Image (cartoon, rainbow, N blue to C red):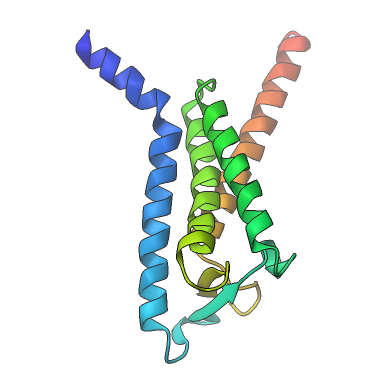
Amino acid sequence: MLRSDLKERAVTFLAIYVAACVVAIDQVTKSIAVAELQNGPVHILGPFYFRLEYNSGFAFSLATGYGSIIGVVAVVVAAALLVYSFKVRYLLLKVALGLVAGGALGNVSDRIFRGHGGAVVDFIYSGFWPTFNLADSSIVVGAILIALISLRSENMTRRKELGG
């Protein structure tokens, strides 16, 4: 009985665990980037580089200079996603919500705790996409998963309505 209670509790808090892991890994990689990329970019493979940049806006450097407003909105969105995750039964959706919330909180952490005037550390450069970080990747992967889960759920609902 105790074992099933622990398992149920772990599942209940899965999105929070995922978000915490994303924030931790994101902050470690950003700290490494800040320490190691001060002297310029490092070529990885093909068009990929590690290149240190600071973004005071949000996606694609939009709304540059509005870091504090973006930060407040991100905290509210992340909190709402994590609260919503308690109502969700589908494990993959919990993971997806945790990825998005963790990514948002990882970038908010930069705005609050790194002394770069509310800017976020970006360091992954591809040559064909704006420079980004692991928090950004987490948000994108989580959003894609949410969209795919939503489409799958919608298709299943349609089949049930059609009697299939």
